[in-house]
Length: 96
Image (cartoon, rainbow, N blue to C red; front, side, top):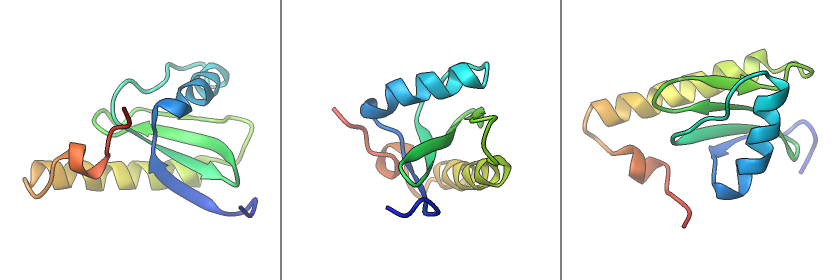
């Protein structure tokens, strides 16, 4: 993957360690619910809890625009859930 490639995807159980480290350097707590993460290249730069909108981000990277994109996507997912069109469970599949 190119270092400039941005990927927004649902977080899964394999991301727990990376989210914990990201939260630690952001002096925050990792997301506890359904979350989206933003990867640049193969590194997680930021994450958002879809329901609460709480974010964590790497303060040593230029991540403000990435966080804005995550917040936008999370708001769209919340809107889809509120509109009854789909549930978050369908939009963010869980990994067993």
